[in-house]
Amino acid sequence: MTADWLRDAILYEIYPQSFADSNGDGIGDLRGVIDRLDHVASLGVDAIWFNPCFASPFVDAGYDVSDYLQIAPRYGTNDDLAELVEKAGERGIRVLLDLVVGHTSIEHPWFQAELRADGPSPEGDRYIWTEELPSEGWAVDLPGTPSWVPSPGPRPGWYLRNFYDEQPALNFGWLHPTLPWMDAVDGPGPRRNVEALREILDFWLSKGVAGFRVDMAFSLVKDYDIEGGLAASTAVWRELREWLDTAHPDAVLLPEGTEPRTGQRLAFDADFELVIWAAHASLFDNGGAGTLPWQSSVEPFFDAAGQGSTETFLEAWQRAHEGHPDRLVLLASADHDFSRMRCGSRGPEQLGAAYTFLFTFGTVPCLYYGDEIGMRYLPGMPDVEGAICNPGYNRAGCRTPMQWDSSANAGFSTADPSSLYLPIDPADDRPTVAAQDGVPGSTLTMVRELLALRRSVPALQGHAATRVVASGYPFAWVRGDSHLMVVNPRREGASVAVPEAAGASVVWGSGVVVSGETLDVEGFGYAVLELAAG
Ligand code: NOJ
Image (cartoon, rainbow, N blue to C red; front, side, top):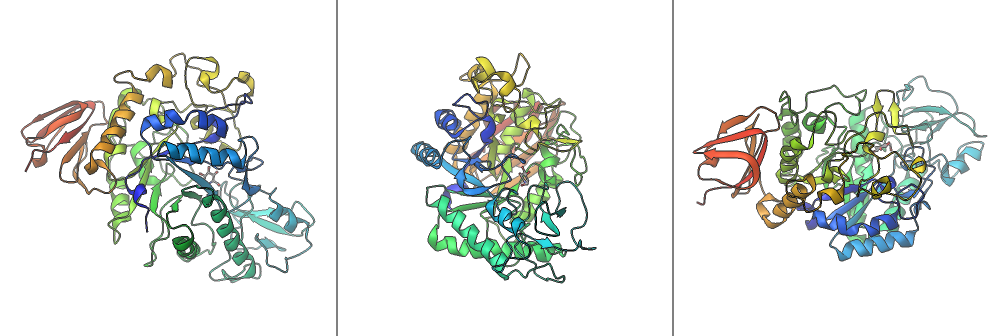
């Protein structure tokens, strides 16, 4: 059962390294977030999603966990997290953590114990080991994909990694174990890991956390027959969901990606169209961060050139609802893995159309920290904590410190600039919260106005129906039976005639004129309109 609050919620993603540094060490921390909760609340968001903040050697920015039950000392303590949950709760904001379950760090005591052993554990291996390099199955060495790594310790053979070498894959078994090194999904190693997952969920949920975003959620079971593997991974989540139903019925689970449809109960509360996925890329990705091996570059719809299409996104959105009309789809402005909304040649004048869509379409929007002021994706940033996965793909540019004001380090930290996690945007005109606060027409004001509108108009929230009435330039859709939205993300003006426009009046927006059934929209124009009564 999806928690009611999620249906109408807006999420805010915080990359903890870069939000606010309270102790002057150059890296963000939980106290820094606590100190800035009023800003988060001022946006009108309902929940914070934190990237992993657990103990870690940070080879992959914390997606390599060495202790799931301990906040990384550089961020503070478990008590700080509890205080954060409480203080956020006082402002009506929930906290979601990031659960990295497909792999751990090589420094995790589980891995260290297996590395020191001279063979398989009698209790079942938590990781996937082979004494002979298999000639088939995960033998390909593509960056960011599972492949074999020679054992760096006494244990003979190789272990399977999930992403970087330092991220050994946890063993959730195979649906069809065909080789000696493969355990069955109900083998002792895989079952130990499922039980461990339950303990981790229970530990944090008992501290008041509202739920989790789950990293690589469908990669647990690794059959070559991907359909089988995906479905079997989903079965693990279904089992956990059934336990959550009684242990923590309000807990929310959000996957990285789209949950496979297996004909059974869905285990997650939403599908998450993240930035590296085709549907999101077709809307917003103008190539700033590079291209991943599995992505083909497409012209994004939200761009001045006006060469894109809404087709890929609308197909994905429709697919998500097939057989599940109430399914929630999370859509992010950006995230820690790719470009930002403001990237390349996309300037602040183009954000109105993009944000009107993001915050009023029938999705659960997720705002990436800094996108509320139009922080830029910064090309050429150094490779910090595994940000550069391959020479053509740099995630550091979307992970730079939050820009608060005009003080040193843009108010992010009192550290010497040379010790900051990543450099601050060097531009003199870099956007800041202070410069935009209360300023009519600023990106921050626009975001606050849009979120306030969404809160006050039920038809704009997640639960109301969405009907697309024009899918090109301009793009228009109706929510519930009371509101019509139109956006024109290209530089050139655009018009469309739709019966719904007759008698509709603009309640918020810029550059939109209604004449009869025609919506004339200036380049980069956007509006929320109220439909004529009756
Ligand atoms: C997806 C996360 O979003 C990304 O940041 C991370 O590097 C990989 N999973 C591996 O955990």
